[in-house]
Length: 201
Image 1 (cartoon, helix red, strand yellow):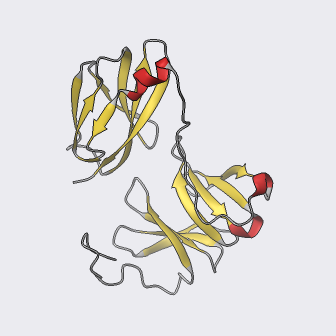
Image 2: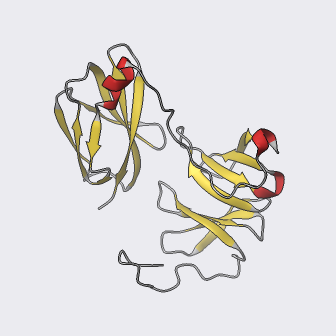
């Protein structure tokens, strides 16, 4: 563990259950998932770093973890040259990248990024900006883009709020749990876009 200035703040997890950690990610419920390359599993720890249980087993050299847009987890499985999808309870859903496809040899990172698009409609959508992207109060600037709806969703897909349509909109998230949220923008032509927001106090 390190403080914001990069100073060593001591061990966060120290347990015999963990033999070869590669990645750690915090879930929306504040528990931690740690990939164990040597043990071939993912392990679940509480917010204080205490071992809870296996998150999922049967992996091979896991490395790389992230959320997909639906709130599921994508995990790189180096031993089979694949990327696997799990729900937030650790249940396997499917291979997103089947073994060895697309020239994948041994993934060590998994990143989900938005499609890069162009055109007048996309320029209108790209006008919508959120600042800051981490905090507990967010200012959304629309620059008078033709917007039909502004909605906030949690990682579980549940709608948190409907926001008014205005050139400048403020969302106060001080009553929300810390974690990742999504601003969904629906244009008048029904085209949609998202912006990731991290609520942190």
